[in-house]
Amino acid sequence: MAINAAKAIGCHLVNIDASNLMEGKQHLVLGVAWQIIRKSLLVKVTPKHCPELFRLLEGDEPLETLDRISPEKVLLR
Image 1: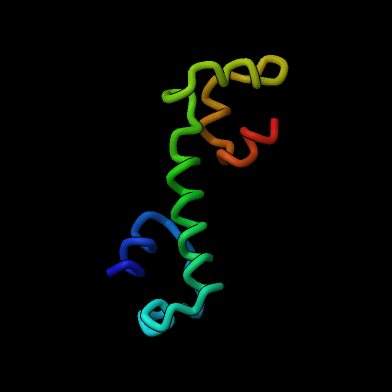
Image 2 (image 1 turned 45 degrees about the horizontal axis):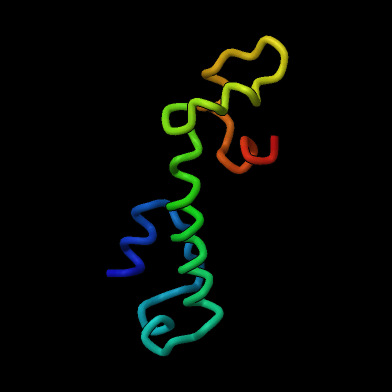
């Protein structure tokens, strides 16, 4: 169920199956955990949730530009 839930929120799980998690392979479990944490943190990096992001617009860019840019790139600005 954990693997299906992670995939449902958009995590990319390569070469990971239930047996890896049940065996507790540390590097794989931490990789899945990190992806889940990252997704949950970045989901709110949008102009809707953070109206202050308008200050990151460059030149005459419309506000909708920030919706099309990935949250990682918005944070790098």
